Image 1 (cartoon, rainbow, N blue to C red):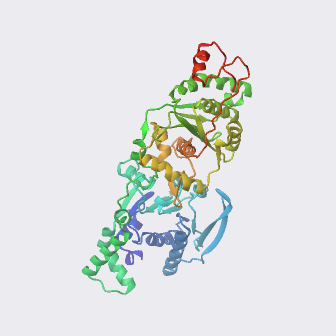
Image 2: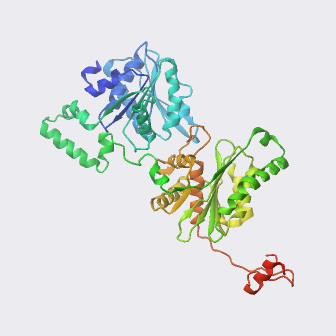
Image 3: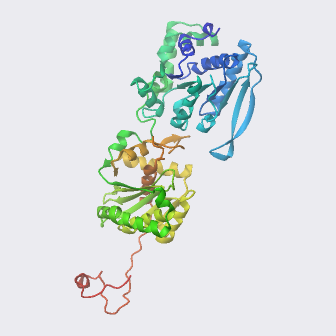
Length: 502
């Protein structure tokens, strides 16, 4: 029945019964409309199953469920009215998720909800189908796909539909992996010109009661391209824009990477269970053997700032010292990472490193959740130059563009390391604000953009307008000499006099 009303590219998509199928497409060619027709046929059939629809936008989910209702009436599919319900958002207890549902006489239903991967954990009964629409724009497509693939174990299917959103977007990377043969998924591609060849403009003329002609179609095509400029290649012709997925493209980050050490301490189970004095002694050994040799990398002539992204066990804690150069360039001489390390020992490492930073300018520490302890402790030790950061959209909006500009202007150097690169590539535009989306950003499930956040914090700290305080201490001993006076400095260095305590 759908063959009479669907265009050829829509029919090809509907007839493809692969367990996982993907389509990269032009905007507004009616793919979701065709998907709605197929969803109704699947859910209304006795041999069918439930259909779940996900997109990034409430209006899209509402539009899809309304299309389904239209098809259900056209097919006389034994459907009930559209129902609405709410469920708590696991990511935000102050917000609810709206769910649309159509129930069918078959006992199956079509449901639409948000793109939170947790929503899929209980799904995956035999034959069930998941539709991810505009997949390139959902907040965490990688985690979503990870959860979605479980639906194929019992004969279900996953349909992934989207226009492009940048060359380094996970949607485009998935397509490249399919083309490279890494996955046996079915892949479709429909550009504006493909759709026009299959009769898209003719159908538009039928619906809008206009007369079709080759000249009118050519004029309509050119007018559409002009409206989409300068993004017509991505929006209409399936050519992903360079750098549009990752906020910091690979080439931009790699150009600012230099050889520099990245050292790590992994907290073992026995280490975490040991009494604090034992942990402190073991950490002192690590600081002496591994951390202290890095202090030679600090230029005593330069001001220094630092940033710390805190994590207790799930992700990495990362401390990023940052040198402020003579020409105001920034350089991270090293990175220090800790995984599964107790608060007191993280404090121990932080203090050892920051005490060694020459001409300490300022610091910024992640003070969200458990990080508040470390941030408060550092503020007690170093004073008001420590910013205790609780991440908000405002913080990201104000600071991430400045951090990106440092890369664009080649005014920053960071350690050359694959994890550091991947952390930076994990930053995405979420609702127009550059940030690290929720969920892990590495295949091992141990990182959440940690070094990128630590370095962004360090960069923000380095830009703080901190007034230096200059003073000269009064010697406690009348025999002590002032090492700041040129005529006394040689005597102090030679040990002929003690320097006063400051």
